[in-house]
Length: 468
Image (cartoon, helix red, strand yellow):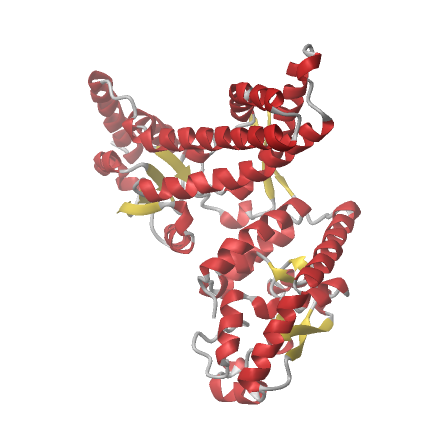
């Protein structure tokens, strides 16, 4: 009997037993709790908007109407998928659903306007509608993020059974280490897909099965799917041919035919123009708002280690063009002369380095690095067009000289103050991991992605993980 036939037989026996026991997927109770918490968060958002409208808007009548419309808002949230995505995906990020929160806020405000149209006495003013839309967007994002954070604290981590071994299985384990917000732990491992039929009982202790096998058969999945459905266990498959799938792909369908479309590196001029406008606006506002902070940081550096306050260094920019990066000085004055004593760039295995306990860093510099405040002067580089708010990490010229053709993808766009490296692990990432996340960014460049990375930067900075 073949392995697949054995699995099919085991699954059939399991189906009979499951049908007799009448199990109704108790493992989804944690997901159900999250759905309810998100609905409560959305309801509180609308209630807060009602209070604001009642005090600073059209008064209690409009506020009461907004409260009564809360079920409509929940239905709209359901229609746009705000309550159904979490249990399907391995990682739940509120920032990823920001476009749908925007649609929810806009749709809810529009429906509210239509509901009051037949009642002139309850008509909402344009100011009320603007308040409702703005609060629904901002508070909706904050409250949903808070709900997910609370949910992670009050529920046990999702138990993951990894099927497979080798680089793919190692990559899954590595991602669980890098992203604790995935809220999952490894409950077991099955080294080979061919032995899965002997260990189907291990699905009983898992919430999710992640298949990370070097070879994947259609028959195996046709068997594993019903086995997971029976137990209420979620199923995730890591494509075995990562090089073929890549990061610049989009899965579409024509009727029942799945199609894999590739982005072969075309960025529209409008996207680049919007990105530049975003850079100019954010860098200008950032320099104005952070001006008092610049003074305080400069004074701290002067008191701690004297002049100079600023540090300038040649870095590789877009298409390899050299520019001088601006940073607050965080090291002793002769730091660059001391580097050969600490590390030999020629002997590095990869063209990247970051010393965990760098003796050249000053006391104030250590704080500035951990909080990323030393990067603030790079807003000037952004305003000058040498850098972007979001982009790959700007690298030393000596390291760029060691790049291979594969590494040069990092130089296709302007380097950024923040970027994939900053939000996906910082110095905890290996060079291959940095290259992978930055390639994914470059190949899928968009203003929406930049906004998401900016929003993800704040928790990454405050968490200080990988910062040194």
